Length: 204
Picture 1 (cartoon, rainbow, N blue to C red):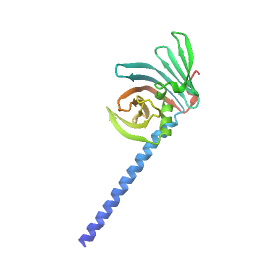
Picture 2: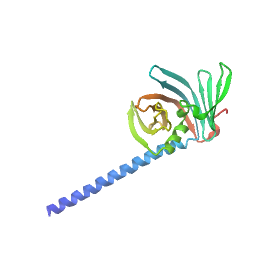
Picture 3: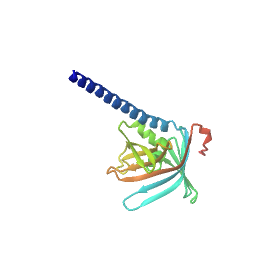
Picture 4: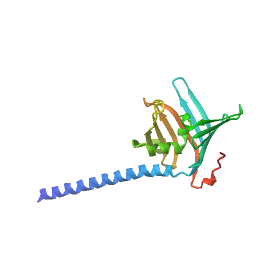
């Protein structure tokens, strides 16, 4: 009789453990896709941004403001009086100091464009290999989504987006080379996003 009870308890415990693991697995998958969907659903945003481009000799630092409107275009205004307007497959570059305006193919830029949330989410949607993890930095918990960057540039091999779980906003994107060394860091401050596209001004 005792053996039967022991076996029954073992079976019940096993079922409970399986249910807990299954539930946690479903919740994690749900959370993964919830964050991706939330970022993909951003209609418009405006944010201060710091961009650090790291090479073997130095770190070049740029500061400015990003403005983004989904399916319309996006713009980066740097504090050095240069602006980059991304629309369709082109980039309009304006340099106030030299009074030069010129147009580039969008694929020509490999530094500034990946700092826009829409561009990074595009990478996530088109790549099947994704990596998810959580990390606590200070008093904030971050949900990190990593994906490979297509192309032959080994200095821009993989990107990781840090989503602040406490504040419900992206905080930074880090681009790594093929040796997992940091090459570009985009850090967002005062990230304000909205579902109302008309609330964000974008001069194209």
